[in-house]
Length: 217
Ligand SMILES: O=C(CO)[C@@H](O)[C@H](O)COP(=O)(O)O
Image (cartoon, rainbow, N blue to C red; front, side, top):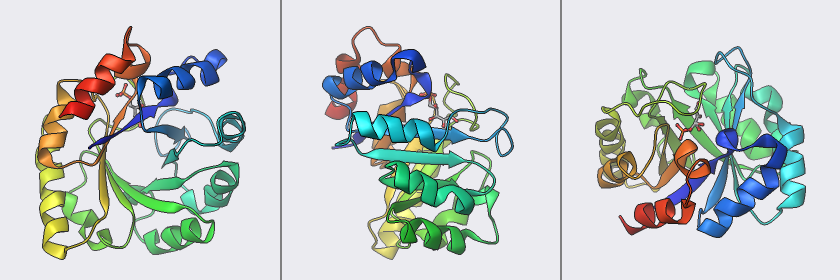
């Protein structure tokens, strides 16, 4: 079954624990923690101290940390200490030093993910299949929640899945941006393993209904 990660970027930050608990009770599988530095992307979100508080309040949750920052190696250990389970960085941020970032994240004790923007050719992540734990395919331009899903994304997911099969490895594939009960099933049909959803879950009157639709596909 496809796993669902709730992107806390769409939470009410004054009631973060309450909002996350509501979604976990609705059936989401993990929490997605978006970190933006105002440099790699044109927005600033939150950092390791917020994750540390969330982890202290909800220690049994899997924290899928997505670093949209220019210098991921510098901050990997901070996020690991704060409670990250998996840390994903952007290939575009460190095109020449991705191996060093992977090593830094592993040394910090976390699983590793690599993400690509919508305009980056999918072939860029092929060498990392079987090397990292997860490939995150952005289905919006990273930086903001609530954007519209880019329709070419399922084709991109399918291409990475085909290469994963060809290589016989089990690297997970995740998609993030504009995921809802219409776009999520398109990605599931293309072979995605994890869906990230922000506004369609946090702003739903009945988040369990959204989770049930996505889990049933
Ligand atoms: O990383 C990002 C945006 O940069 C995403 O995690 C979004 O926060 C997902 O939000 P929705 O598009 O589902 O509202």
